[in-house]
Image (cartoon, rainbow, N blue to C red):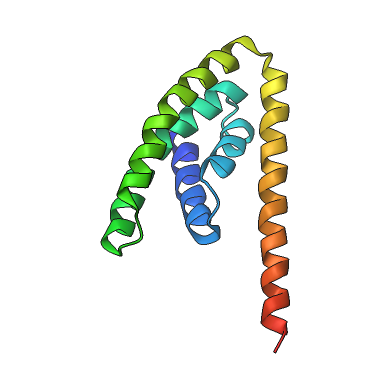
Length: 127
């Protein structure tokens, strides 16, 4: 199980950094499919795993001048009540509803990335 978690962490970290997609979009399905966690446990584990990754990423990007600290602090502080509400909801909703909601999120992410890639190809092909 530990080896699987290590492999998932490295692979998801690499892919999320390469593709610019949030690690949770990769961590959660991998934790469910590879390690056999249920949806809620996989989401909670992914949230915990993302904390150190986000801190390292933010510090590195801050060195390049790419972080708007004030905006990040505002978003982070406002996310706290949202996270608390999310925990309450995920513990009262049926797990199947959570699975469907996460699947819808993944479809939206795929659509957004695909649409952006097609638009970029269109711009690259025009003079």
